[in-house]
Image (cartoon, rainbow, N blue to C red; front, side, top):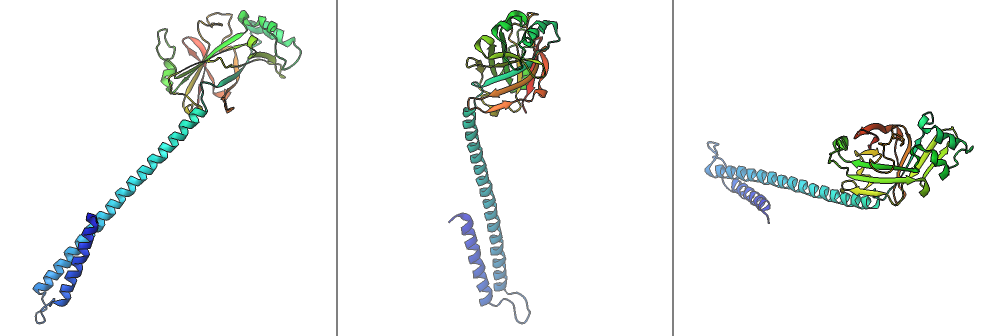
Length: 287
């Protein structure tokens, strides 16, 4: 028996004892009407035992409330741990480092830089017919390659200082480097029904990834910032004025597809052109 239960039992017992004492003895003097000594003792005992009972009940209620809160906290902790376990499983099943990226750019045919390429594509005389390798010799710079770096940041401030200076040591939490190449059949060009010329690219299994573990899955994307840049010092370096630049090409489609076929089609209207290390880049904030 715990202390509170014992206290309540004693209180009930004393109440009974002093109640009987009041019944079996003279509680008041018949002549004067005053409470006798036995009556005073019985009254004091009943009051004392009553107070003891109230204290015991309050203590019991307090202990029950503490126990209830502890149980609720344990339940909440268990739910949180279970939810985290489920989330960890989902993260494993939806990794970003093996995702495919597909994009489309609209070519600015009004620019003299792209007129020869657009003219070549228009000579195909058929909408949605992919350009052949020979058609790409008119692509600015003469390359059939479009390399892109996709850098994901959990902290928007890191994205702001990323590449801000030549000696900047800030790195992204996840980087996916892709090279789309017409010769590998993952970079295409064609004319749409509206006569617009578009190029479409899709990353291959050979995409290079770097991560510090903070961003592993699509579940980690809310609040994450994406910077899409052209790699410096790689093929198609934006330092070459003949190389296509992201601020010249209009992004019209961007999608991430996971190995399990789950897709994230991103809102093109939320992409914006910014400067990263003095070079044009596309920026996107995941909601």
